[in-house]
Length: 69
Image (cartoon, rainbow, N blue to C red):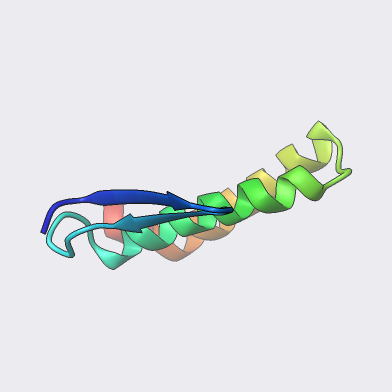
């Protein structure tokens, strides 16, 4: 199966063979798209966003640092 991208009305659909990426990479992509959706609607300042990003990165590192040690 080849990778496909389809656009129809207000949607974009991706078809990706499951042997190309793992589920964590897909989840990271979905999280990024969700972030873009939320940030478009947000009135938060850049400083607020930066503080939140720092908090998220710290949380991620606390959960995953053992993978890199």
